[in-house]
Length: 248
Image (cartoon, rainbow, N blue to C red):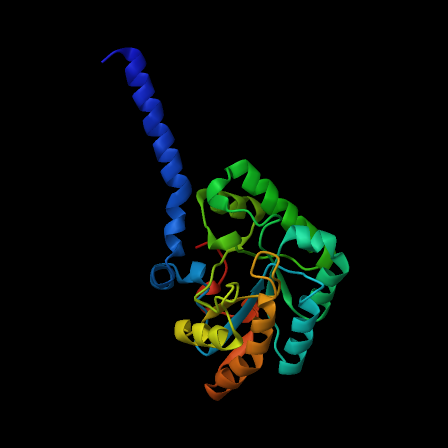
């Protein structure tokens, strides 16, 4: 084999390994697998407690309605905010924190980390963390990548910023065009596990238009079911269990 060909093969092999390292963490996207093998990443907490989380806000067209509904239910939740949304609505971001909710990072832009390099992802996550901490006065602990697309660049950014990645164990699939309040309730119920972290959305900025209304309408029904099951509801900071300190 000529030296040039050997070098070319070596470069191609190295590039393949780099690509594999970037996408390998995405295997955690298999919900049942991560609940079993990476409970901290999945957000498994103490049995009997549900961590309620919302992505994609703050949105002035929908988030205030969620804040009022959560007040009525006596619940506090974790809001995974987009930096660009918080920058556009700083007073609302601060209001979410003032109402007793936990603030977390969903990225500055809603961009798939599997398609982004480490430097870009680190800048994006750092910008979101710094902005949210400034606007809300809270220390920021959690990171959930957009689409739940965990990559090597996500993990690098998390370590660089001192954030802990967390996805979810249960979801309402509330972003879909065909979602209804009933489907949100049933999807959450069907995927609920002990110590669940539930993914919902308080904005439709990356979802079907008006989809947040289904989520909002589902909350009282979920409250009835969870109360009947003796479950407590709160933010990730109160979740305990596998969501303790440290990266997964």
